[in-house]
Image (cartoon, rainbow, N blue to C red; front, top):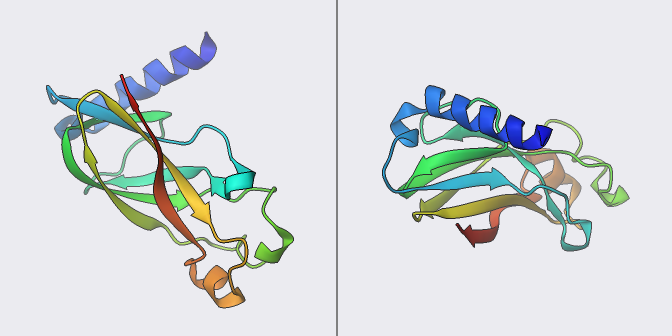
Length: 137
């Protein structure tokens, strides 16, 4: 019950702070995956920007239908392979463009290359944001 209240409050804040995106008749939702999926090298991301707006932290973001650019950063995770020892330093944010469809939720994850070179880990190219799942509402 508490989690539902937090989602409702965070969605309301998104409506307040992202009015250009939030009051559209046709809309969808964008969110990070809820849990890491280590066997698929899929990890959580944090939303940094939606188009040219800095969103408030939220569980999911209400977004008008149409094409949007999302800047996300990878959330470091203790289940990463020991081979990713250089990746826990500052991780660069990456862009993903999604065409939002009405009444659809898009779950974004960070796909990590567990065999990435030291250079790829240091420059942040050892991962990419992907749409992990779409759900019709």
